[in-house]
Amino acid sequence: MDGLQIRYDIKLSAGDYVSTKAWRDASLEACPNHPDGGCSLARHGTYGRKTPAGARVARWYCPESHATFSLLPDCLAARTPGTLAAVEAAVAGPCCSSRCRPACASPS
Ligand SMILES: [Zn+2]
Image (cartoon, rainbow, N blue to C red; front, side):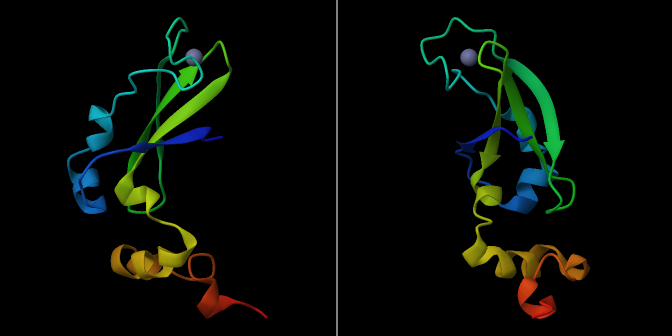
């Protein structure tokens, strides 16, 4: 699972986020479950996002609380239901079939 998603306050477009591999610069200064420190919070690799192509999200793991934390940049976090269709149309192109845009593929 992706675990808890934390906002990564970075001023990049989704395209720039991918081209600069900005997830490599992500840092989580304190464990959300242990804000005063004392746990063994460590980088836990990255996971890929389907769109935009090539995007990855940095992830951390706190063994004491068995929790993972993902640092999700604004440009990807903005993909909420209200804006999803527009974002997909802008960045995804031919991927949009049944799953991406329910409006154009709904069986009902
Ligand atoms: Zn912790």
